Length: 422
Image 1 (cartoon, rainbow, N blue to C red):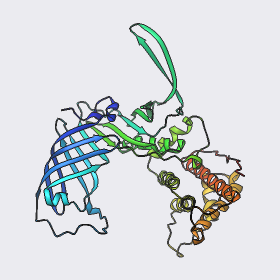
Image 2: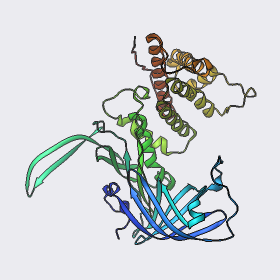
Image 3: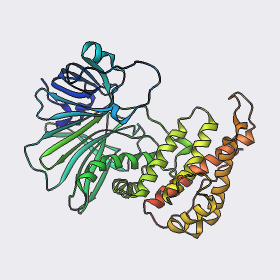
Image 4: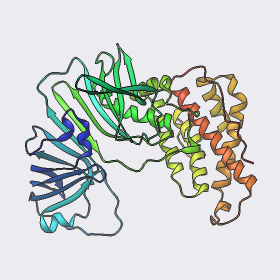
């Protein structure tokens, strides 16, 4: 029986379908403990699937009703623990929602799809001197946008018939902090190998670092780059998380970063560190980016405009610790943005911040009012459509500058696109 593929040096095993025999499957449900055996299968597009036959230990199953509307409580989120054969460690599926499991009650059988699993096992050496790992990202696209050149030599015996160059890599080297390099694999994937210095990074940050890479890549490319696999060697243990991939969302004209042929490496490195280090600013920036992707996924322009506009108030409120509490906590947009400008930007932004307020009000007010509820077939003038598009692009670019300012970049100058769509 093959051992778990991703724990081998070759991350290309991620792309292979596997099936595992599970000698142990353990979890809790309806006040009882379940133990048994099963089969775990993996498909990179569909994720994991668990088939298990289990026995219940504990009190009789309480009376439950099936179907209908139910609230998901924290108690409904369970961790399924698994012990694969020929694997010296444990596999965990956290936060699995177990509700209405008729297969468990009737047949003592669990058949469930799982998007993400965490594998942990001891290793034969102590890696305490460094945090080493590997991570795989989906959604980078096929266009050559990576900043560093990769040279590939082809040899036959002692002959060297050809050398090929391509823009398919990223290399980072900071002796006191990190050493990392990445190569494009399988066209739409990016394979990162990295080493982090424990005198600069904590153990938790070493686990977060691969996710921060995905955040920085998503911001700079305007694509929802997904971390689908990460492996980290810490001390005497190796930890691997593997997830299925999802459809990539592209921000297109809503991309917050300036247009660039290649990924901006000068910004990439500090952004990765920014997203790795825990801070209020990093949390706000992640939320801004996530909501921008959510806005781009909306089917109607009106919903996209409204969601894009709400990011502005939500971000400033969170940064300045002024949550919405009705009239008891009055929030003034102009005053809040001025406070942000004085702390993170400069006086060069005064006129542009005034335009931000005007743009935000137009996008919010015309879509928050019930009058915007009309069918998608209704006629909208070219002039109106062009103005809406310009407002959305302008506000999106301002969000990009907000993120850069919050990440610590100094001397940011306002450079907005001067396009007219009329």
